[in-house]
Length: 477
View: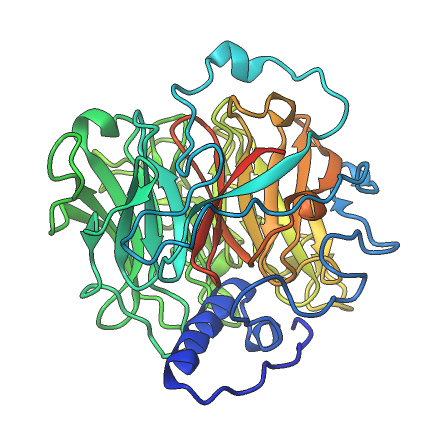
């Protein structure tokens, strides 16, 4: 279990306690255990006290990022610390226009970079100066943000309680894009679950199709449903789903997973956690829990070629604990999976396109190590590309390979973070191993705990701060 941090003092106001309860639930979602959360639930700002190995933003002494397939390497050259840009004016209340930075709140810079630009290696020395620009505030427990394909002026933000918010032209619209609060269910007051994942059809601009991942009423089943935009170019969705693709009994308050994304093969990939059971169902090929699923959205009842040939036909990968966030490199198609650890190790997995049906080892292995710690075992499954000891991270949040146009010297670098420590990390995958690990915490100076990343139509990267209700964009410093 992660170490137990000290609690904040009890505050008498009922509203405060309710917010604290929600934040505890979210910490449980990511950290995967009560012990990991007790010390990290806060009203705002970065973690209150340093974890073992030094405060957030500093490399842990003698404990660099461990590249499981490429050896260990010390983080790259230190980046100059920068203040998070102050929003102009007061933070926007929910439903009001979001505060804007100097470059505008939404900030997608026109059309996406061309294929030639994306493939062109940056001729730069090290990582450029970076900053986080405030995009939106006043959101209610945001869990994810995504850009509308073909429309760089729009972002959709998921709120845990079941509301999909539209940010249009830099302003949070008062009317929800979609409200599914009546469908969303938390199995217990301190549970994770809620509205967790969103994926647009690659041809969304024309067909308006999208999918949601949430825990459903009345029993907290994991549901993946297709929905549709109400009108082309419209600001709302139809109030009823088109159809259900997955409705699986979960039976727990923890390890729901939550990510949805389309691969370059045109299929929808979905992450479902193992429900924190012991023994874990992660290696059980008859169960969807602890898996990455791969779905043909046009024929959801038919298994796409390449899926597992025995057991559940939707399974693509297995042996996962809680793959909270994964993403695809929009240039190479590589899949990067952040799998939350249990006692000692957090991990990032990298998978080449089309090379699924992988066992990632849980619960025989935690990262590249036998589980439980101190035991011996016959190693099982593929090792991670990168793993972090608990001195560095306590609840890994998978991010994106940057492929935007605004920061050419960052192109090709994978960015990810940790919810418990508030630290930001990065590396470059050379096709075989993780190289050039660089910690970005000091450069970004985050004001909050990163719970998710997102990507807009132009390939620019966003950060979701669940505990402060804010969305930031990664910009050049």
